[in-house]
Length: 443
Ligand SMILES: Cc1ncc(COP(=O)(O)O)c(C=O)c1O
Image (tube, helix red, strand yellow):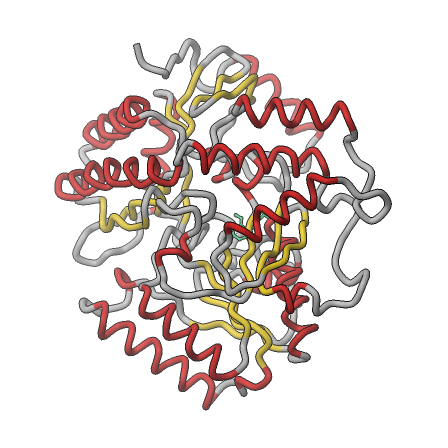
C-alpha cells in the first residue's frame, strides 16, 4: 500500500470552509500554492483536515529536510519548552544558543576560525550578513545576481531579482546594490559551458571597469544553486572565478545556503562541492526541522567585527528553536541524510531525464544532488517558457495526492523539495503520479 490516500475532492469540504474563513479574515497577499489546510504531517506525508493524505514534494519550501514532525526534533522541542520557551538571549542566556553556535562553527565550510550569530528567518540572516560586511569593510556596495531570491525585507528584496510578485510597487529599494548575470546555460545562447563561464567572468571584470569601483564593494551575495530562481546551478569554475576576484578586491564572499543547505544537494552544504571557502554563510530553512531559525556563520574576525548591540533582536536564537536545530543536525549527521539525498537525487534525475526524452514540454532537467528541477517550455525549438504547462501538471497532481512547488523567473519550473527522509518507494509513488499526469496530458 502506498502513502497517498485521497478520500474527497481536493480541496475537501473542511478545507473549503477554512478557505472561506481565511478569505474573510486574512490578508489576501500571502500566496497559496495549494488550497489545503493541514491537520498533521509526518515524514514525507501531509494529511489535510478532510483526511486526505498527500506526498509532500514541497517540504514547507525546503524547511523539513529532516522530515515532518521528526520524533527527535519534537522531543527536543517539548523538553526545551518545558524548561524555558523564551528569555531573550540578551537578557538571560541559555546553553542551546551556545551549543548550536559551536555546532555550526564545526560543520560550516567557511575559512576558520569561525563564529555564529543567530536570527529568525532567511531574510534576516541575509540582512545581517550584509550589515556585517558593510560594518567590517567600511564599504557600501553589494553585489547580487539575476534570478536571485534573498527574502522579503528591504535589503533582501533589493538583492532579489524577480520583479513580480516580490518587488512590484515596493520601491525605492536599497542603494549601492549591483546586479551581475547568473549562469543560465539553457537560456544563454551558449552551448559550451566553459566558453560561457569565460564570457561571464570577462563580464564581471568589465563590470568593475565600466560600472562600479570594486574598492567600494563590501560583499558579494550568491546562491550556488538558485532556489526561487529555478534551481540554476552555478558552474564551479564561475564561482571559483568570483571567489578569486573577491579576494583580489577585498570583497567578502557570502554563500547563501538557505535553500541548498542541510543535505539538499547531497552534501551538508553545497559549498563543499565548489572547492571554495566563503567568508560568511547564511543558513535557515531546514536548520531547525521547521521552526523559525537562521544564522550567519563564518570568519570569527568578521562576526566579532560588529560593535556590541549591532546585531540581534528579541527572538533571535530562541531556545526552543535552538534545541530543535541541535536535534535536527544530529539526525542529519547520524543518519547520513546527505548520502541518502545523493542517492535520491540519482534516482530522481534518471526518472526526470527519461521524461525529458519522452515529453517535449520538458526543456531542461537540472540541479545538484536531490535539488532537482524541470523547466517546462511551449516547444523545444523556441524554448519559450510555459508557466501554463507547469500549472496544469501541478493542479492535476494535487488532485491525485502529490503536492508540487513551482519556481523560476518565468514560473515554469517544477522543483523538488521533498523531505530528505522520503523513502525510495514514496519517491517512486509520487513520481508515478506525475508521470501519469504528463502522459495523460500528452505533454
Ligand atoms: C536562498 C534563499 N535565501 C533567502 C531566503 C529567505 O528566507 P525567508 O523566507 O526565511 O526569509 C530564501 C527563501 O526562500 C531562499 O531560498
